[in-house]
Length: 111
Length: 115
Image (cartoon, rainbow over all chains, first blue to last red):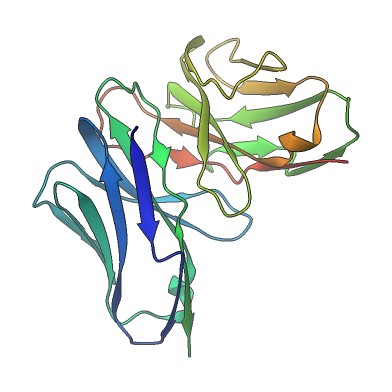
């Protein structure tokens, strides 16, 4: 069965304390891996799409990487405004246009 | 264009009542999606439209759920005979044409509470 697992479930960082979030997947045929940010009471906000192992994308303090089994979202020198839930999702070969989401990592960055 | 718009933002209904939600996608996007999200979980796919055609439906979409996109623009999601288990955030998203790389643009959702 296709699965997307995110860890940790929750992460508390001090401002400036870099860390990484993990998204591991066991799927047959990946057509794309997506990262989203979700603030409380709002819909997910698109961050990145990764297609193939070795690919990297960056945006401000965020950098996403992809291997054959997992993706990492690296957060460098985070600020309190980076506090949110970070979701990863996969689109599968033969899966049409739907995304299968993980349960997310809830990030809290404190002063 | 201010993004994907959903209405209402919140809905409280009694068990057994019918409810309808509306989604207005980004105007140039021909693909529209409905997802459901419960607390502490990621969004779960419900259904997908390309223009006015409903091309995919999840097993989660029971007979009590129906979605339409009559003119390929806005969409409605109706839940008949609501149950407490239907309480969730209902998210709409849209995306342009072909290709894998684009991310969906999600609306802010409609939070449904069934009492």
